[in-house]
Structure formats: C-alpha cells, structure tokens
Image (cartoon, rainbow, N blue to C red):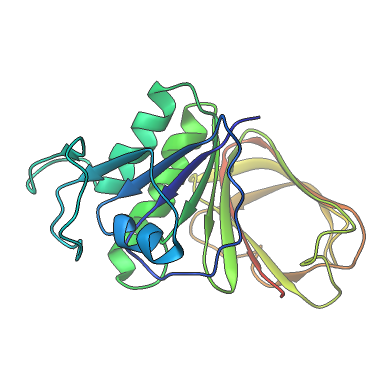
Length: 210
C-alpha cells in the first residue's frame, strides 16, 4: 500500500527511507528544512512558514495564514486523506514543544477516525493510535525484545474490551479509561504480540532499538 510521509519541524530522527513511486511526501513548514538536510525532496510543501529557515521554498508551495484553526501537521494529514492515502508515517512530530507533541497525537486520532493509520516516529520511540481495531508486532521486529517497554493508553473516556496477547502482561476483554494509566510499562517478550480494542481509541507507545 502506498504511504503518505509527513515531515514536521519537531525533533529529528535519522531516516533511512526509500520512497516508492506511489508514495506522497509532504513537508509541513520546517519539515522542508528537515527533508533538505536529509537530501530528500517533498512532493508538496505547505504551511504558514513561521518556523522554516530555508529561503528557497518552491514557488508552488501551499501558503496558509498564521492565524488558522488547523496546525500545519493537520493540514498535511488532511491533504493526504484527500488524495486517498490511508497509511501515514510522520517524522519530526515529537519532541520539542510539548503542545505540538500532544497536538500531533490528536492528528493520529483524526486519522484513526477517518479509517486511516498513522505512526509518529522519534529517535527512541514511536506512537500509533488505534480505533476499534488491532496493532500487531511480529517476532522478527527489532523492538520485540524481552524487557523492551511498550505502553497502552486509552484516549477514549472508556476503551471497551481491550485484549493484549504476547506481551509480558496479558489481559483479555478489560476496559481501559482515560484517567488511569493501567496499560503503562508493559514489555515485549520476543513472541508475536498484538493489542486489540473492540470499541474505543487507544495510543500505543513503544521504544525503538537500533
């Protein structure tokens, strides 16, 4: 499946990405600097450009007013959805300002609400939001090593019938709530694992291993 890649102006992580012909690469504001430093080119450059450092923005970039309802990252996510993409990978969306980090987790929630999936990538961790569905981890995944941390949080007031299998702490058909971090600090075991939520929205955070 083709992927929409979005690059923002947050904490940068080293990227070894090979884009496929059908992928879409969007630079959201200072994400243009990020891609430029990586030696990569964006298909679309958009934002209010209040934080971009480069002076050689393309002539066809999409400019928005600074005072607007959507963040630059949300504008990029909406554009990807409009173009038919349902898988998103977001770099430069974590670290830095905490309000931007929380806002970008809301972007993941927006994607989940629109039948799409997205992952926020940082230097040492990743976050995915799942609505009424499942996230799986294969045995050969680099991060799937014993003692590596993975945590599950309810973004809904109640996430109903959450099942966790293949991790150190397994549960079946339990409810998680947004005001009690019951799912924090679980651990991979090296076995195939998955987290399923029957009804509700959860955020899954796991740490990356080189």
